[in-house]
Image 1 (cartoon, rainbow, N blue to C red):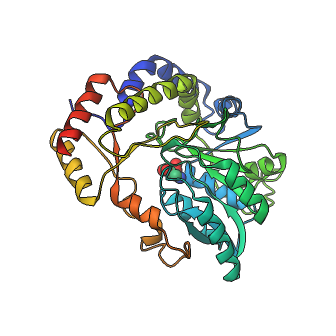
Image 2 (image 1 turned 135 degrees about the vertical axis):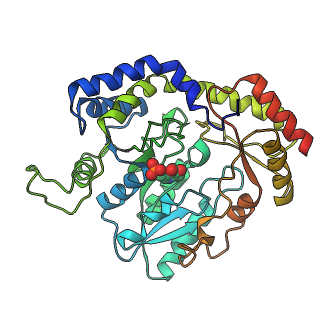
Image 3 (image 1 turned 30 degrees about the vertical axis):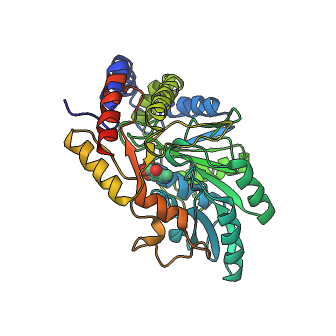
Amino acid sequence: MAMAFIDLKAQQARIRGELDAAIGRVLDGGAYVMGPQVQQFEREIANFCGAKHALGCANGTDALELALMALGVGDGDAVFVPSFTFAATAEVVPGLGATPFFVDIDADTYNLDIGSLKRCIADARKRNLRPRVVIPVDLFGLPADMPAIQKVADDAGLKVVCDSAQGFGGTIEGKMTGSFGDITTTSFFPAKPLGCYGDGGAIFTDDDELAALLDSYRIHGKGSDKYDNIRIGMNSRLDTVQAAILLVKLSIYADEIKARDVVAMRYNELLANHVGVPTVPVGYSSVWAQYTIRLADREARARVQAALNDEGIPTAIYYPNPLHRQTAYNMFPSDPAGMPSTDDAAGRVLSLPMHPYLDEGTQDRIVKVLTAAL
Ligand SMILES: Cc1ncc(COP(=O)(O)O)c(C=O)c1O
């Protein structure tokens, strides 16, 4: 059987009975949109991460757009985002009339670099853009440096929207993603650490006013009367069936996070003498959305990836072409000092099979093929 990059079948085998029963209850109940499972899931996931409010929505991209809408982002605003991320982080910004401003990453963690963020804020002012929001991304599952980012944001008057599509469940000093910044967003895309069986997303905040705005924007800008819309919103709800599935998956998520960490630590042990392995700063925990190594150069990466592929071992490059170099984004500003860490990472990173059900024998085989190819 082909090796899975992310083994959703093994997870499904573990909870299939509960999933069938949960989906069956939605079919019996008939409330397919905003049914009781949505509210129950919102309560349980808010509890899980320690946020006051959680609101389901249609996907992680909408979650980001709704967050920026609730913060009133618009014409003339600069929104600071990493370039080394999935397109969605920046994609939502131009649609609101604002400018995405690309920030370099820290070479070790792949998350926003604080010095670069400060340079970009100063440069935005010179360009007559209004610094409004920073969107740190918890790349590959590791929370961004929230204490430092929050301080820069406070000093510059920025709001903070944490894009935790990959990092939901990660922690800094015991505090979980979902409870940092003004708003946190996540994605339940099937391959995410906490995924559903379709599209889904959520938004977290401790702020009652923002929560009320987000609730309105996700349902067409509704007021207290649903036929008196009081703002221009969108249709972005989490399906009841997906909420029912997520309730089952959330019940094993803490256990799966532990299993992911065991797999990642074992990769570290086996690979640290051969390749660059991921860095987790002291006091942080990652949910290992990806286990990403760094090879010596582009050529070494191509060789290793080909050798693994020949043995039926799937790998992926996240991300081969950073956003500030992509056709749709290369006209937007980036760090005036350049983006060296972003460009370097794009040329050398490689993500290996990673999921909570990766057994030691399979992992040994991956490591053996990889080290032989070096
Ligand atoms: C960092 C990041 N932000 C946003 C998204 C968008 O999530 P979705 O696919 O649910 O729209 C993703 C994943 O796809 C992501 O990895």
